[in-house]
Image 1 (cartoon, rainbow, N blue to C red):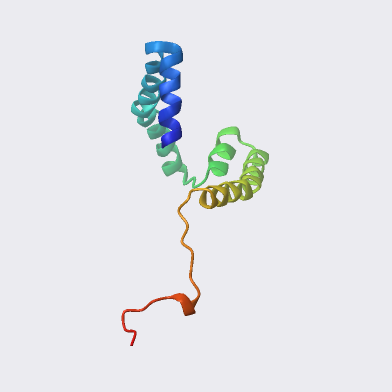
Image 2: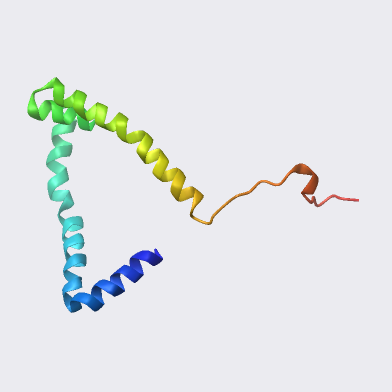
Length: 109
């Protein structure tokens, strides 16, 4: 959020209007993504491929590629979980639970 805005302002200050090329490139990729994804989706549907490992194994005709992709994904899972945990801890959005003795209820006497 805020960091991206400040980074954009700094990039615009440093490079002038050339910073717009960054956003034009991202926009072009979003617009061209269907042209790249529809053939891949068609191949996956026809050959009943359900994962990236299946797709790469089919493409390169090697079960070793599928095993390598699966191991890479397994190795990346703890890293992703640690990243999510770090962001949750440092986001400032904490839901602290209070002990029952300090809670206030609507029906107190």
